Length: 279
Picture (cartoon, rainbow, N blue to C red):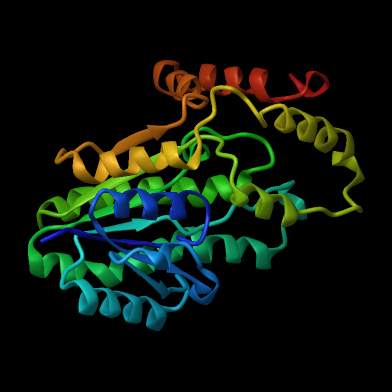
């Protein structure tokens, strides 16, 4: 019998590419999203079930899981992909925006994971794969809230892996670098801006130009590239925890892993801070 994967945030970007990748590799796919009625491509596959799931709504999560099991008999893996990136100066990010960031990126992952674990324990098998980010291990300016949410999932996943190993359930983390998807379009649309914070004006402008320089780089991964990494992580039958998805972040992780802490911090300040703000 073909195996089955449930993917959150499958309407676009990495989530949709991953759903298509698994479907083409003969997996049954439960492709979940907030507005399934808008999906036109995934529902053309016989082995794909497109259904609603809102990660902040526990009833919605339970219904999607039940629907998937009813359709395919069993779920073998869950990919927690749904999320978004809140960018901007921390002082410009409202408390409501911060809560929304954690509701989706942290509590949403926990909600889906908690909901699937009884099924996995009953089967004495399963894989939980959480999509974090390069910004979940290496920080940059203007990503304080987003990085905080991804650092949280890194810690959650690492600890959870110990617990679930006792139940023959694997936990995996995939850490994408910069990927040109609608994820960044939404992040740009929701960029936190407060015109009263004049003190940050020149710094913000220089940082915007710096991040703009990343776009269109030759060493960036596509959504399909990340989907391949995710598929490998789910199917390699190892206990490997972390998988890097993007050569652009590999040098930063090397700095993080090889240097003493303050030397690492100083190196990143040199890399990311505009010249006029280095000290």
